[in-house]
Image (tube, rainbow, N blue to C red; front, top):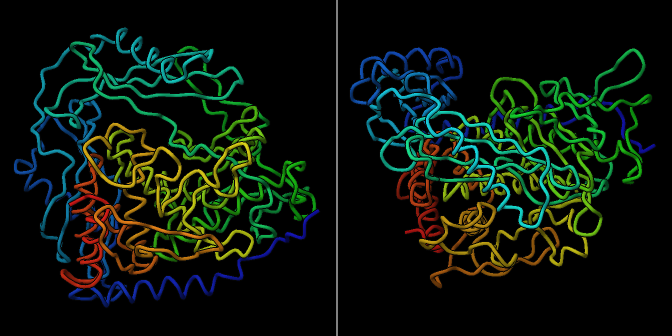
Length: 549
């Protein structure tokens, strides 16, 4: 057995110091400061926002037919408050109905960021209108996305919604189409269709994923916190919201009729002596070690760096992992239904097990995004969703400072095999090295798969942190050109992370596109470091360098 022992985190004291340092830094960068005891609570922020919402309902376009629900709350060091809402209309979810109320430290109204400003006033119609056509279209689009593949157990389940993301608000069917490929692994697509005509509005992958794999030796010997049982130990971390890892037993999720049921919880991995895995893929516990380690480091990164002290969802509860999913499955994915990460073992030719550290950070960040900006998983907002996961997956890898897997700006470099033909899944210094991703923005970027339209934001992030030109990081040669021939001076990974996190949690909404991301990150830089300062100018320069002006 590998020499991994049960122990409390030796980093707890250091983590506490890091959190304190981050809080002091944020306070020093705001115009006025307040002690921690004076900072309003989450509940107080919600109460103040509710009062503002009631007073300004007409100005905000909130009618009697609409209801709002709090999704997330951010309280600044100076007492400023940012409360994010979702909306329903006559009980129907509103896609693009999300907005953020920005309040002053005294609880008064400052500003609002809205995914859409369009008024929502639609007649009541039969919920059955065009549903069969919507389901049929979704099923056909799922088949078209997998040409030559036999899809089994294909089902499509429409849900009536209000679409405010694509022009004037209208009734639409949001249909989840799910199936299994010939190997028994899941495929899924969400299709949006007009509820009156059945015409397609948009479509996107439902599984927020990276196509990758990972071996079981990525992190070497790592510390783990576990839970003692009557007969031994469970791979469950009580210090991080009972985050745990289960063995899926090479099964996939169960789909019956139009309902696809997550097989959850996968049986938690257990051990007799608290020494987990052997460092080889032959031992099923080894992949579980890497997955659990990835969730631990990601939880710590968000807590230590951004003060997200209550976990990925902000509710104190841990997510969970499923390893050994499917049959030679060359993928890993996040699913909001279970709030969990799922990892395949790979086919051994293109990829190995998908449990590397940057993949874990990537997948868990989808959870953070779903609880904050909720970036829609299609078009430019979908590219930003994927880029957010790549950016923070990379920063998690640097944060871990693991000598066996040093930080770099490659995604999935540990999981690819010789048959894949490239050294990584994605390259953030020059995204086009993968043969498909965009280095620079143009009007066609919105039409790319979200894993490739993400290249523009990935390139921006690299330039903002590291600057243009050649350098070696983590033993890997990087060389980032600019789209306009300019020279960009980086401001460091720490400031990139703080700016992107601030933009994601305070200034972005579900409909944010690349122009909106530029605006959001400039606002975030001004919030943190002052308008017109070095960091603010660097953000503008990095966006211009990738063609977003």
